[in-house]
Amino acid sequence: MAKSKIVKGVQKISDGVVEGYKKIETGVVEGYKKIETGVVDGYTKIEDKFVDAFLTKDGETVEEAKERLKGQ
Image (cartoon, helix red, strand yellow):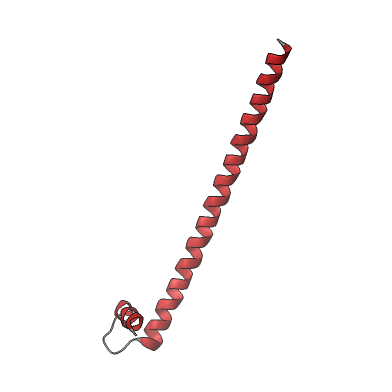
């Protein structure tokens, strides 16, 4: 019986550690994704403003200017 109680106790501890690790992992991954999205969105806004201000031709949209520049 003592061995059985020890095994059950170790299993409970193991389950708790795994559950805690998964919660931490999820939090870290979600935080990273939020930061990554914010950085990419910020860069895209700056890029669009730069293209609009300096690289578009008369009557050309930002998207059209980006496509034209990719072709060059």
